[in-house]
Length: 319
Image 1 (spheres, rainbow, N blue to C red):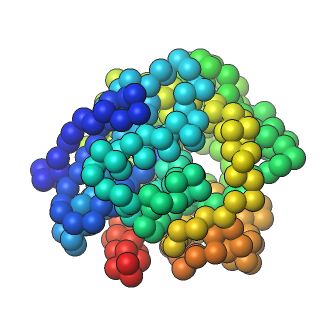
Image 2: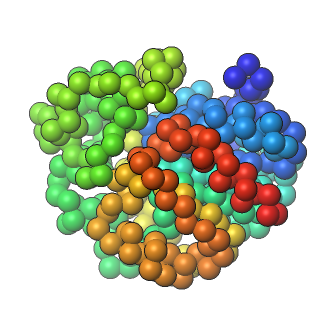
Image 3: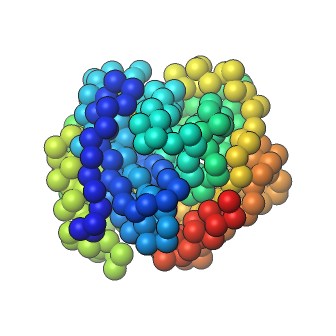
């Protein structure tokens, strides 16, 4: 980790913290929730050792990146965040880059491909597949209809409410609960019982997540709070409105998709059939391969880094 450089770069009206290492073609690593550049620590070191320049930012609202108005969720749309990525790519002196995204980072990476295909050489996305825009119903409304008001995305909507709940749980426990989550069922936050039935389950850290790792996340989220990350969920319906011009648009970049067998996103009803039955390929025509990592859950960059690293490298070597 000592060889990883940390820099602040002015992009799109904010001050973005990046971690980078290596020389060669740039690989932009985009993290998800509730994560940081740190979630890519294994990939950064591996890619740097294999002839690439790995660059992992803290997204707006996260970690050491500053300047985004945390109290205004409308400043966290996919257009804002893709704007940050485009400005970062330009600031790095590149015309186009390889991109790897996970969770929310995967959703941002899909949009980067839609909005600015000229910036992406090829994409490896993890966990969250590409979903075409639903023209009939807004995103949160859709989630509420499918899962009810206690679904975490629904409970994240009202500013301040879920922050108070997470504060009552404590930052460290929140980090541990999310990162060690292995249930294939949806996450619920019933009032009075955060994390639902898992609320009182003792947390035993897996071998791939050390106390030191948890402490790093905890320290950063204690400094920033969770609002920045939660704002991405609060902007979902605004994204739905703003992304109307890209209804039925296809992702034109070459893509490899990797998901854990036990990832809760992979177990959303209909998703396996969509990914493996031709629906996914319809919208991502240059989909090269779908990899399902057996026995792995959602946070595969950390749980199975050796497999993920190799899959990323093997795909990038084609270009």
